[in-house]
Length: 366
Image 1 (cartoon, rainbow, N blue to C red):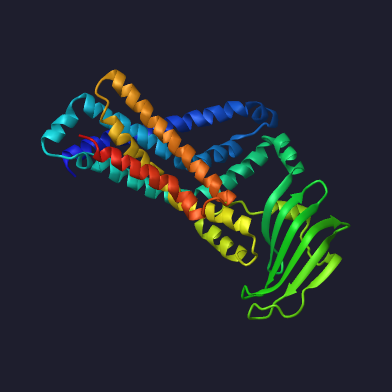
Image 2: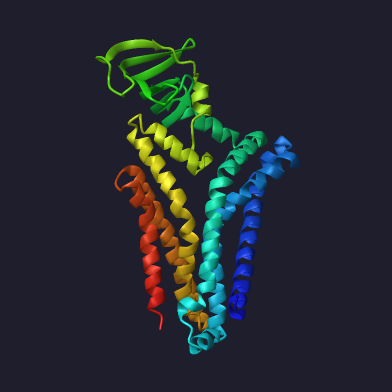
């Protein structure tokens, strides 16, 4: 590695980790003070607080890595530009991309790390964090209020190789609406499909209303005419509490689990849940490159930091574009889950647009 590359990398690393640990410290301090009354009231010990706050580290790293990257880029190249070191590098024949090569490679390594941490550690961290919060007794009022609400787009796997998809689950009345139940054999071949308008749990039994049952042969073809029943008692052993406790949340699943879930759910025809899961899956692939794009955004604006006034305006403009990038991505994700955009387009559009725009700004530098 050249001396120049080591010089730039040292500055980037120091700012990146300073930002990360500073934000981590502030996040934990704010959370401690926000929940201090509950912690003292419940007499929560270090055996719970320690894993609770340690579980935040992977989550915060994934969320703050892009911000730390753009701040490190703005500081490093802004300082080099103010000290006229960029001019010296350009005079020696180096291009902007050659000068920023070290930072770009560093951001790619961060992207790879974010992808690995987000897939391997973040789902378990969220699950552990939720368990610790339950043990701490924090936000119990909110949890109770949430349980009174209706749960939408509920899906889960039950006993006897059944897949349930429910449009709406009303907790106080133990009522399900828009029910699809798929039964599979040991080879995951569909054997029957039950569609019902409503289901009510009463006296330990599930009663389905306006239910239609389809039976399938080994080739996936309907054997006979579907059976219709205005009211039918279903041999389902799962209780309402089990439906709520076992519902799958994409935040607690890695890429492999989401992919398998999509494959199994694709047999149900549950288009809304499938679309949302595909958006979540593709987002896992595209989200890590945010760090690279943030670095590319920061490079052209940091090269304008010659004087103090222009430096502050350039930094503010870079942070504004970074913020708009997040907003644009959130809007695309929302449009993807609403069905306006295809999942792949919804998760990639903002990244492609801002990536192209940042490269344009870099190549437009004199």
